[in-house]
Length: 103
Image 1 (cartoon, one colour):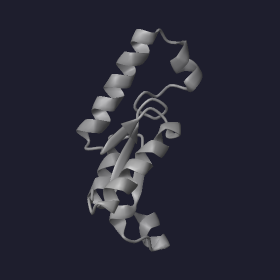
Image 2 (cartoon, one colour; image 1 turned 90 degrees about the horizontal axis):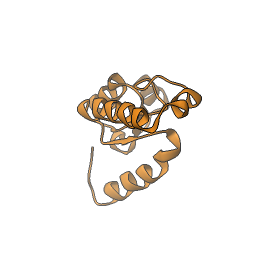
Image 3 (tube, rainbow, N blue to C red; image 1 turned 90 degrees about the vertical axis):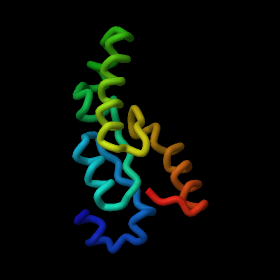
Image 4 (cartoon, helix red, strand yellow; image 1 turned 60 degrees about the horizontal axis):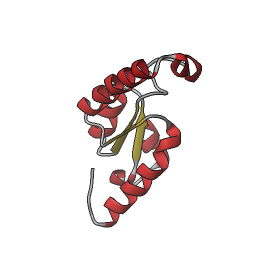
């Protein structure tokens, strides 16, 4: 929120808060922003990419689901596996804003 104030970003509903914890998601929601959770490469899974990819696929899926569920329960508008996956989400948010929708 401090960054919004310092940068005088407006309107707030056009800002996207991307985070990897439930607290990040809640901060974005409380600030009136779109909130996007990062599940796999963030703190919710808590592993490096190398550690994660070394796991069996069923364990990868389980950890991904647990992290996704946690971020969704926090209220994330979207949850992605990594920052690489956020670009289509930004396009979706832009389209929703164009129709007058707000977070």
